[in-house]
Amino acid sequence: MEPQKIRDDFPIFDERPELVYLDNAATSQKPEAVIKAVKDFYTENNSNIGRGLYKLANDATKAYKDSRKKVADFVNAEENEIIFVRNTTEAENLLAYSLEFEGDIVLSKMAHHSEQLPWRRKAEKDDKEIQYLDTEDGKVSVKSAKEIITEDTGLIAISHISNVFGAENPVEEIIKVGHENDALVVLDAAQSAPHRNLDVKDLEADFVAFSGHKMFGPSGTGVLYGRKELLQNMRPYQVGGGMITSVTEDDVGYAKPPEKFEGGTPNIAGAVGLAAAIEYLEDIGMEKVSAHSKNLTEKMIEGLEEIEGIEVISPEGANLVSFTCEYAHPHDVAEVLNQHGVAVRAGNHCAQPQMVELDVNGTTRASPYIYNTEEDIEKFLKAVREAVKTFNV
Amino acid sequence: MYREEILDHYKRPRNKGSMDTEIEAEGENTSCGDNTHIYFEVENGEILEIMHETEGCAICTAAVSILSEELTGKKVDEAESLERDWMLERLGVDISPMRMKCAMLGLKTAQKAFQKSEQF
Image (cartoon, rainbow over all chains, first blue to last red):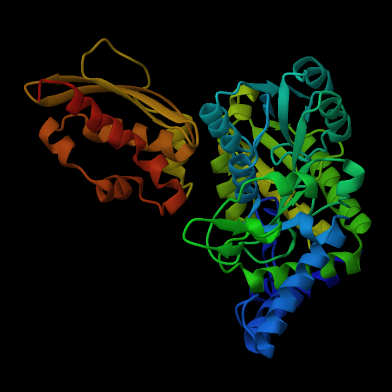
């Protein structure tokens, strides 16, 4: 892969040629192909979907439907198993609202707030107990899963790849333990969908959620996959237009999934943009994408480990690196990096309980993607050395 | 943002420590983990001494350290009326919106100590 050439596909690097963008776990930059797909939709095909009787409306409906098909194929699901949402947070909230199940809830200590709070609220409302899987070397502990998940467990919500550590969790094993106990498993794939092949049939997860905007799609795009027999039995999330079969004064008939969960005019242009993003990723090839992120992360980890006062939190094989600096708060490190044109994230990464357990006041996190070059990594490491020099007492 | 004086206050905070007093308050920015505990000795409405225990980023720590020097000798009335711009001027660097809470934690906590105390 040639990241230098890939950069040419991203207009932001024309505008900001010096930018070293290493905050891809938060959101990705957008390639011209995605920007153009959104622009073309608005200039050529814009209409509401599903109800117009004119050609333009049919074209817009087809564009939206084709986008769903693209997403479904990307994760090896069926079209009616793909619900468009705003982001992973909305996917988790939708599920926690619409899904009824017997039994208690198991979360992980490393859980992002978005895959934690909807279920905590659900537990409070439905009087369910919550238990947390331990973190072991930056991954969800299988040992802890085997101890905690029992036949009393109704649902397990875990991350495929944690946004704090960047390492792939042993989700296959945990899903297996879950299913052996007849529990449902929700997989937060926000950090994995942008970086690796995601085959929902292979994974055997019951639900998978991810954000389009972290994988080159427009902001406000996200996906919830659910096994169709589960989706059919769930109650609707937001009720209103576009999600019914009939409404009388006394009765409402709801549409089948996915429309049942997509009340109101959806983000049509966003869906079209997301389909273009997937096409762009597929053209490059997910294996290459995955190898590139891991390779750059490895280089960052190697470089960071040579700097006195830096402690790397991410385990080997991660696709992003979280680290702390003995002499400075993560925000100060990030600020010095910013002064060197390097964009990283610092803080608790929406995982405050995990930070408390690690006994740190946050970490600095650098997350690469396909447009990052080895030169970016050198600039990043140089800036970290500067930060250490600045704050070292 | 990290001019020499800020770094010096961060690395060697002035008036570090605690004291036995009723005029004190703790403040925290939960989102970033900055926290401070500030103590005042006051006589006839005048601040005679300030001590603080601060754990936080460079901006937060330097701001509390500078504050502890600036408020010594001032009247409580005056300290209570100080606003954001005064603190930013003392820091003398551009503070980005994301860091404003760090810069203001000290002043907010000091004012909380006066409000909490029934002496004023």
